[in-house]
Amino acid sequence: MNGIHDLGGRHGFGKINIDPGQPIFHAEWEERMFGMFILAFAGGFFNVDKFRHSIEQMDPVHYLTSGYYEHWLHALEHFAEEHGVITKAELEARMAELAKEAA
Amino acid sequence: MHDIHEEGRYTTDIALRVKAMESLLVEKNLLDAKAVDKIVDLYQNKIGPRNGARVVAKAWVDADYRARLLEDGTAAIAELGYTGVQGEEMVVVANTEAVHNVTVCTLCSCYPWPTLGLPPNWYKEAPYRSRVVIDPRGVLAEFGVTLPDKTQVRVWDSNAELRYMVLPMRPAGTEGMGEEDLIALITRDSMIGTGFPNSPTA
Image 1 (cartoon, chains in turn brown, orange):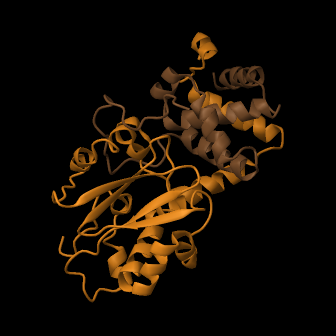
Image 2: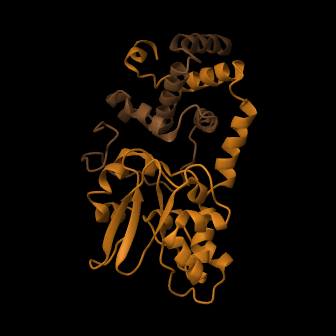
Image 3: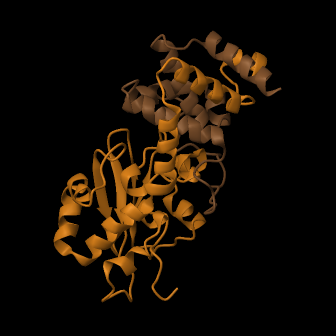
């Protein structure tokens, strides 16, 4: 699939951000996302090819403007819905609840 | 979130969204939050490029191991106990005076986790992925790596099944050094191909 993810040979993305001091995870949500992903993968929720395919279906603008682990969240949401485990509506309702608790 | 979520863009509330996902998975007994903690600790603190450095150092001091490593990377790396997710199919490519190897995943972020840990951010981002395949010398220059004109640069594009690791050249002045001392010289970037091992005098 010649999608937006297929970056090899494209021009115009600018300089490489080489910072040897970069942490592996930039925020706690990245850590949680990583751990959830690994467990879902190990549990057979999806395989690497399916995972990549789901990322490749992302909206191209979203793909390029979002962070790496956000791509993973997109994939996890996709499979949670596909497996009938969590719907988008459920997720948004839980977000609203958590936001209320935090307020 | 809000309206733009309809178009599949929800960057603003990302932390909350991840939290909601975890909370639902736990509630449905599909996920153990403590297991998430363990996985994060494992990849943050235990699995990293020091594993790959052990492989490289052994290849530098043991010619038979080096031969096995280049013949069947997966098996030779497994001899040292490094196996598992994202390292199922390993190919090790050796740098020489004639050829310098660089690895990338233009499509995403495939990287040999058991030997190198999780990739640096630049490896996962668009500038490196897009450009290293068409302007490898320019990219290497950004990393401070310059090669003689006569040295050929080979770029290896990883995929979901197959991962590459570079076997850098052993630095001059390390003759007689043991594996442990050599390991300290081997950098992560030297095993990606965007750097060299440190020199013993540095």
